[in-house]
Image (tube, rainbow, N blue to C red; front, side, top):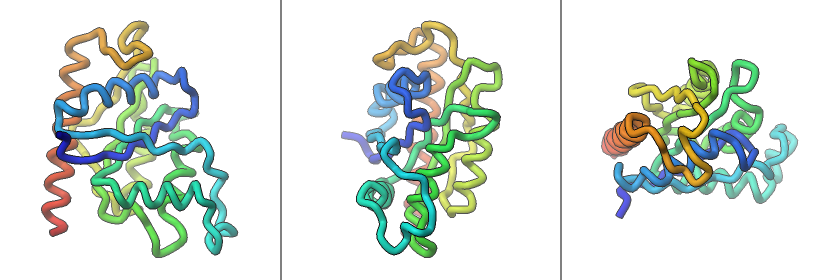
Length: 188
């Protein structure tokens, strides 16, 4: 039985995304680390603006409730134009608003991503971490996980071809579980 439930934002809205494949791989590996990953859907969120604060759309209220109910949040992000995708930022904005109702406050978090480039999604992850810091979400600092995608590394079902990548991802998820446990213990 998984120790912690982790709500996961997959930053790419494409079903064929390499980051969706990474999410599927992480989902397959998560029980080995004592985690259960559950995707938080973000594709139906309208663009946030404060005009909605008085009457939140149901999809945004559900996102906030899901973040609050989770033990932790994982963000699997691609890198678009040297930053996070708009969908990730939009989800972070919805779940942290209206002012004073930040669902991320104190919520353990982690960021990971994959890209064909040699530095993976390092810059996008840095931008996400900056927003999570402002939202008071204690974020896993080490190990960092910038996965360089290569043809055949992860198949559509999340099967990982390279054993060293598989071992690293299990290590990453295990470190995240330890981060969650430490953060939640400190809050008690």
